[in-house]
Amino acid sequence: MALAELSRLDEFEVADESVDIRGFPAYNKMGDYLGDVDELIVDPVAMKVRYVVIDAGTWLESRKFIVPVGMVRIDEVSNRIYLDNLARETITRLPPYEESRLTEPDYERRLLSIYYPERVGGFSQFTYDLEEAFRYPERFGTREELLRRKGTYRPGELQFGWLNAFRTAERDWGDIKGYEVYGANNEHLGTVHGYYGDLSAGQVHYIVVDTRGWLLSEKFVVPVDWIRIDPAMRRVYVDNLTRARVETLPSYDESRLFTRNYQDELRRAYQYII
Image 1: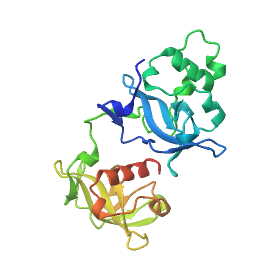
Image 2: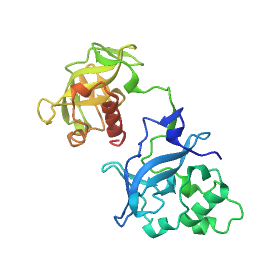
Image 3: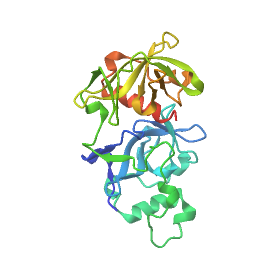
Image 4: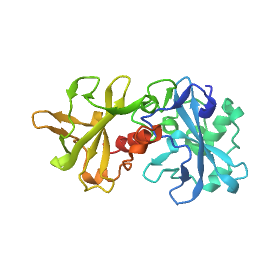
């Protein structure tokens, strides 16, 4: 199986629906700082992440080590990962990380025999059947695949702007500006202030809600996939959303509205509210 660092694969990237953990600090459950996530090692044929590269800094002589993706626990609230049962002493026994050796079965077998001695130590031949080692963390993405090929749809790369009519791929609702917006338990969240999306297709991707002052930033943004429209009542429902959840969303900033970074922040925020 050919493995490579993600940054060296020009045609692949982390999918929008998934969490890019590169740059996250890594800790064990004892609270020991182990390093920062430096890179993801992937199988480009299966489009799967197999290992995570940790830059340990100066405390480790070889500086970098790798862990199977199944050992990772993600805390997206604090932008950290946890390698719960991994002690520094165990890390010092790992073979030094060398990307050029990733294709060597002996290198991988030695690595996994330290992480999973009861599973690998007695094997005469190593296989990729260690389900525990390569099972994706719970918050790595809503899909099994973390990766996707570049060139596929990315909202931040479209020509985004304000739209005058509310239109989705499924149907045209006309103008819903001014509709009252309600969340979970029929909690009033505000009114529809406007909507924006792909100018070239004329399709709305987000609505902007004016909270009429109960929220410090006054407005917040909702993806259209989250809303339910009742034209007879002139209402929009966001069934899973509460005021408390709204307060955790990225602050509304019209100057950032059409930037890739802002849309990525929104997508990550809504992904874990459900």
